[in-house]
Each structure stands twice: as C-alpha cells, then as structure tokens.
Length: 228
Image (cartoon, rainbow, N blue to C red; front, side):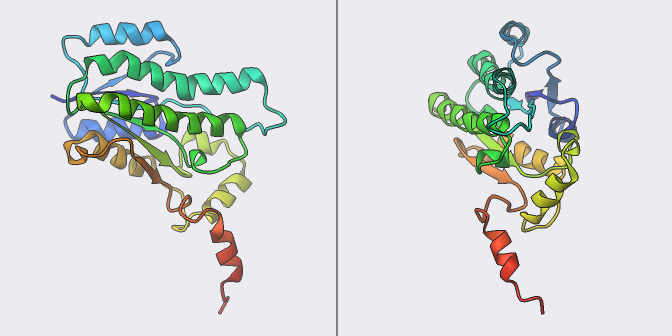
C-alpha cells in the first residue's frame, strides 16, 4: 500500500488531503509534532525504515499579517521556521527513505507569486519556492519528484481570521469570483502524488481561481468594462 506523510493535517487543506488520500486507499501518516523540531523528524524517519513512505505533503504553515515596517524579528523568524525550515527538515529526513516514483508536494501560496503585504508570510512562501526547485534538482536523479502548489483564497481556518475587506478584495481579484475549497487544492496535490504526474517535477501550480494569472490587470479590466 502506498504510504504518504502529511503535515498540517488537523484542518484546512491538510485535512482535505488526508480525506481524499484515504478514500483512494492510501495509508496516511499525520504528523503530530512541531515541524521545526529536527529530532521529531528523525524519530519519524526511524519508525518508517521498514515501511518507507512514497510521498510527503508539507501542508503545515502559519501566517502573520504585519507589514514591512511593523514586523518583528521574532515573528519573521517564527514564520520562516514553520513555513520554510519545516518542509526542508521533512525532505531531509524522509527523502533518504524514498525510492524512484516517490513524490513530495509543498504547499505554497498565491503570495509566493505576487507581492502581498504580510511580509513574513510572503517572504516565507517565496523561500519555499526556492527549496522546492533545489530539491527537485537534487532528488530528480533518484526518481523522486518535488512540486509545489500555490493556493489562492481558500476557505480555511487561516483565511477565516482575515478581515472582511481582505476576503472581499481577494475574491474581487479572482476571475472565477469565489473562494476555493480545501478539497479543490487536495485534488491537485493528489494528482502530483500519483503516477499520473510521473514526468512532473519542479513545477509550480496555482490553485487560485486565476488570481495570479492577470498580474493585477483584473481591476483595470473591470473598471473599463461596459456596464451595459
């Protein structure tokens, strides 16, 4: 049976990934430790030596909405540690156990494709793009694929804490005109884990209703639209 490790599986996108994979009869291991803790990753790897995983999904993440002039060193480092160091530690611990055909999927953000104002979060997701590309290059010769998905405004506990104006403005930038669901992101992640994506690595796939496709041009286009 294919085995996949999923971080951040308690809610949101991670929980949706677990539900979908289990429906496909995939054995899912949900991490119950702080992804910043190297020793916990080592312990998990040791426990899996006799039954190595075929996949890793790095869903665990945090946000912090302070702007450039207000973010503190401590908050910046905390967000980087969870959103960037955590996935890297997971890759370092589990990739040595994986064989050809294995797949690693990192969860980025539309903020990694644009210049969103929460600087710690945005910088961390841009950094995760770099980790993904470097890991794809490093692990490709072993037949291990590494990709990243970039969710847009998805209805999750994280986005539920955003101000109403944040939600309204985000949806206004989506050509589909609505929020996404965790299940819609999970479906893309499941594809990248599967053999159907056997020649896909180092890829970045937005799951954002088209929000990153227009580079801010949507508001211009909408302003010029003939109301008739």
